[in-house]
Image 1 (cartoon, rainbow, N blue to C red):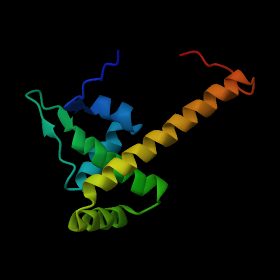
Image 2: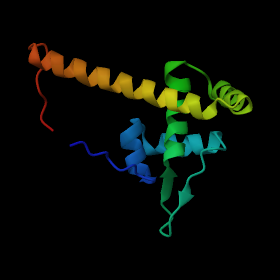
Image 3: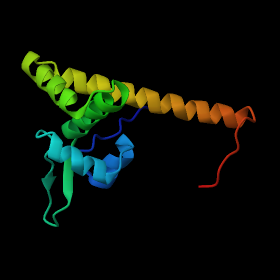
Image 4: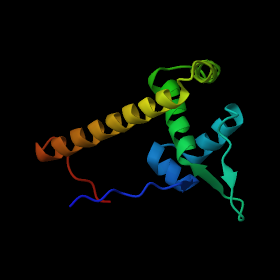
Length: 123
């Protein structure tokens, strides 16, 4: 029997930080630099991100950290994706690529522990 994990509609800034491996101040800075990153706020004034915004954050992260774009260059590339209708597909591809990179790093850490090249650190 297979069960699918329910897709979460909204994420707190802490959850987005955990998903993207970014610090809260980085997300807040990116909000000032990329107009499409504008999460809603709940009654308490806390940021509430939608799944689509998390994908866009991963696209920005991919462009800045992996492809080494400047912020202005990343903004231009995202505008280009938007004009050509490739934004959603590009965001999902970047999300998958970042997830694969993180999974590979985790697997390599586990292998190093299993092979005795690294020690398990306490939580």
